[in-house]
Length: 143
Image (tube, rainbow, N blue to C red; front, side):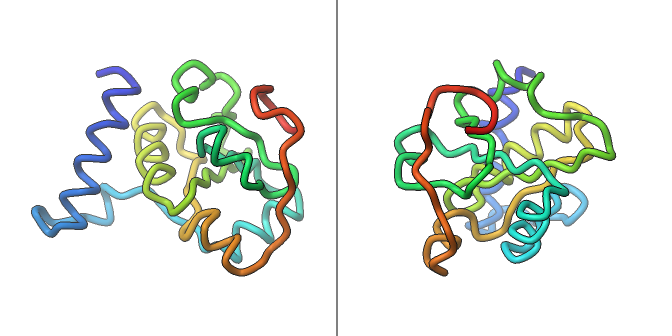
């Protein structure tokens, strides 16, 4: 199964869980971190936070210092995601649905160091936490 197919099936699974169609096992679901934890770890430089929203969403503002990697580019840019257990990675999207699905797909690919941020950037913005306009939406890495 390709990485893109894996993400698709994760969305199907998550949708089924939300609708109560099948039981959601904690062993199957990827690990989340709270928004507060994510911000503290990111601002302290202890994690790499990757914003997987699409470019038009990044234009609304991003957390300072995040890596921009739209979900549509993740399969081609997986080499940019550290795989070592001692290099924690947090994925953030708008609400957590995409970041949870991508986290689960990456875990299936052997990335044990990746978690997703509960609440996402919509909650970050709602709380009025600092956001910046990205300088270059297409460039990989930090801006």
